[in-house]
Length: 181
Image (cartoon, rainbow, N blue to C red; front, top):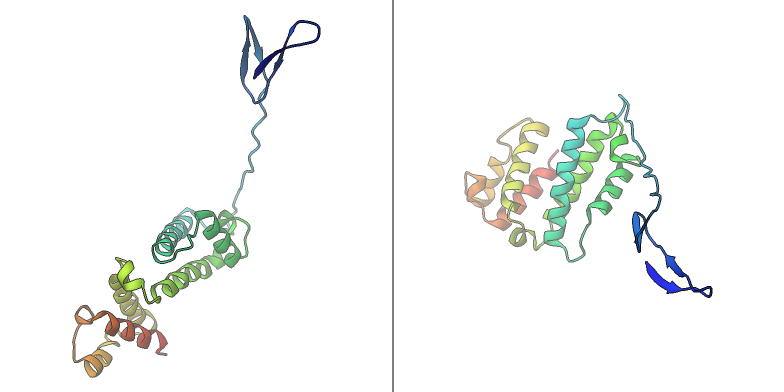
């Protein structure tokens, strides 16, 4: 707001913005713009609250991991754009139920690629824990043998436990198990 003299000698008040303006003893009320919000109403064909929570938590973990390992930062907004693109959706609220697995797999693959970086073991505090968990999960769920990794580590490293493996040995075991059919 600025006060200036007009040619007729009266004060001219220039108002920018919204709200109440005090001009001497007078109060001038400025109308506020109405707030327009898009209301997203997901239907039964879209993911539910629990699935949205899973995606949100995975996205937060992915962004944190990316920003720990890479110089170029990944913003939350950029991550959502990539997630929505993988789901073929314009908003994560509107992701179809059948795309839930696609989205979670996409985020997990992004994190797996980050954890495969050479600098990941030294920069990511969760690297070992996540690698061991991934090996055990793959053995149990996809290979239907919870101990599928044991013959490999016995033969190649003469060890019995994943926890005993050195960083490079753990990475080799991870690569072996993930490539196994």
